[in-house]
Image (cartoon, rainbow, N blue to C red; front, side):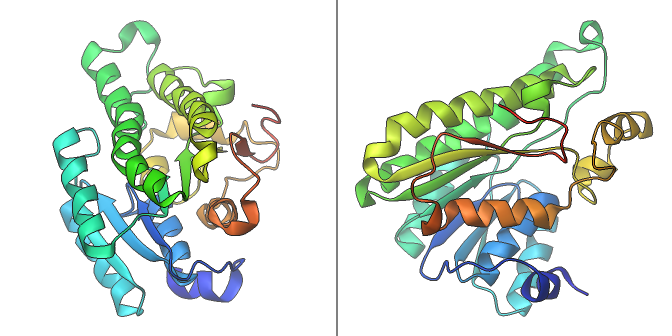
Length: 263
């Protein structure tokens, strides 16, 4: 069964008709599943990624299913590319109602003293600076329309930490702080901001690209005895961007199989 058919036939449904959503890092993995799920429920979805070939493949796949999707190649860590992308989305579609800050990288699996300055900077640049820049570009339009839904894809690693993953953990903790700050800052404009913090997710390029030792280390920390499925995260995201979740802002939702219970 294809990803689209799986979502159509088995997942929770919401009504996102008329909404415009931007999902960063959506050429593959969790971002692709979230983007597909939003499109299946009626949203116009803008796919974004730095990998042009993978982005084109996902765009064509979703278009072939009749979903209303668009695609923009942009490096979220570069302001000029982010601004050009957001300005073009506004020109074409008139608004952005939903922003899913999903783009991210894992970085090195090393002791802290082995991590280079370049490795640290790269993780922080993509995961934190990238989410900040896209949010910075989108928020003025959300303020103008007095409506918006922003989700930061964090990680249980940002709550509990993981040994030998200090840049990643620091970046994901930063996203939690950013979400909480913006929830207070933007609430009066009708903009809701939350963070979603999954444990290790099965079948994504980030997970599959990990060294075996790292993947086994993270998997054994999940009490329910299995990895989190990307469509389970997408269901939570869909609820949080729906009008049913209007009173909810500034919260961190752990979807970690019992690994952590507070943020």
